[in-house]
Length: 275
Image 1 (tube, helix red, strand yellow):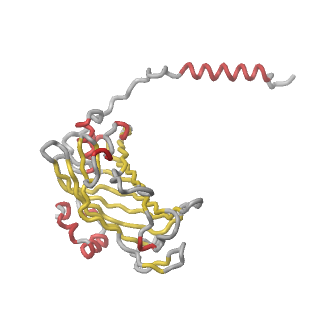
Image 2 (tube, rainbow, N blue to C red):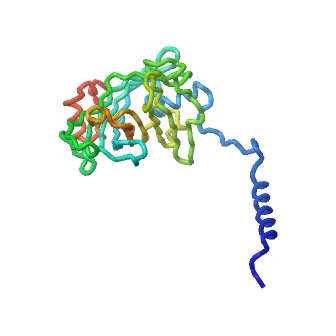
Image 3 (spheres, one colour):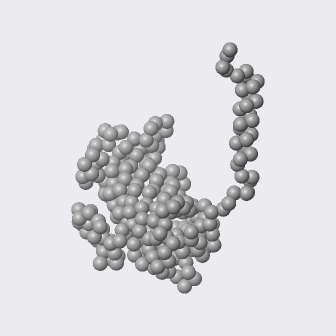
């Protein structure tokens, strides 16, 4: 006697099991909502928590150390790893009378070889075969606005702002994450984009005495190939993948990175975090 059920019996049993499984699911809208551990639903609460994670509630200076890789992305091809980078981002958050904030930041990252993470001076582009001189990626005095309307670049308008949406947040038992897109001004088109995820300890987030939360940052950026790569006529774009850390002070930075910054961007040392 065959141990295999008939096709009709098998299908009936399978459909019955599926129906039973579906009936066990909660009805639409009937799921219990897990309350947020902090207020990210109101615009004022969302702004406050965003500033604590990115910067400093009430205003103040913060420091990030980050590193990662640049990939070349060409149509129909797998992203190709090009160079490693290592950098610092110092930011000064200022609170305004209406409760909104703006931040001014100086950032510099240095190009390094991917194997030993040594500073690149002359580099042979593996895709073109040409010898080029890598240049630091530098931002001086970039300004961003943060308010209950959202976040934007100072040069942009509020209709281009990234809104403060509770969906930006994910809460775990011990960690919390917020993912935000960079609010590029309208003049930036393809392929400019940036998404950043910040990770903090949940016990820090729920402690109102902590005005600036230390944590990790992960970001993915797409933009045109850096000019120094000599690829302006090549189809495609650059993809930057970075991991970083918000630091308590500059003493947590590697000595060699501080020495580079003293040479190439002394303005960084105007920030209080270097005092």
